[in-house]
Image (cartoon, rainbow, N blue to C red; front, side, top):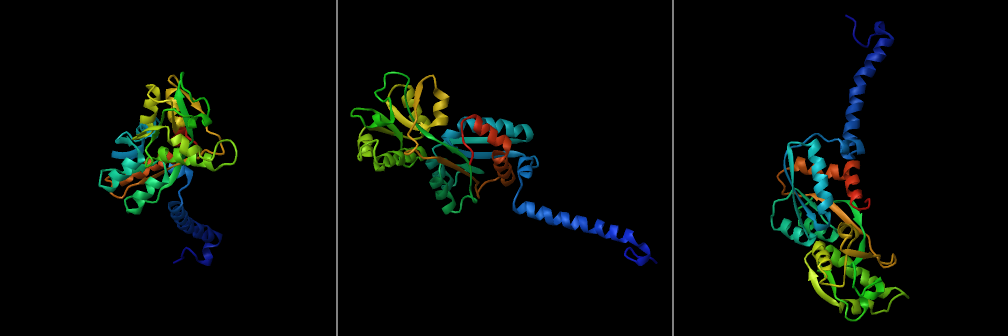
Length: 283
């Protein structure tokens, strides 16, 4: 009986050997892709189903809602449920056992609080943002960044534990440390004008919209939602900071497959396009 690799088979034997080896080589490539997913794999995951609970920073409200709509277009059996709040409040909720499949934070500090407790997987930065000063459309004594230190200015910020509140204080400290431009005690003079610490970035914006404060520091993405009511004052580049947004699936979630699919979508070109539409920068 002639075997596949006999001399009688000749060159077809070599072809047959190649046919046997190709599937093995293909299997090795799949293993590499699993270890380091490519953009094409991340952009076209298998459809998932069930509820996906996403806890996300307040500044992501509009972008994530639209992203959720687009996500369910290709995952019609899935339902994305959002809870938006300050990242500091969300990190506490997750560590206290609140149901969640995904956590999207506005800074790494609040994400670290969750990962340090072992309640989330390794996070990845998916977007960036830029703080800015906002003032009422008219009547504010603040017309430049330096005016924040003027006596009598009614300033509102988010609390220091809230990412935008921490970023704002970092900016004021940067201005005080810089040579030239503002006084060395700029941070102290500005914080002396602080009238309230708000629970999240949207609460700061609301105070400005209602005319209950002369100035606040929020993200440019949030300011863009209220251009009828507020005016944006850019923070000098040498003082400003870039806000980085990490995202991770939680270890106590009930829909691991859904969480993985949501992360893949947010990192995909389609997800990034939605974020860019609302003013977020690339990671």
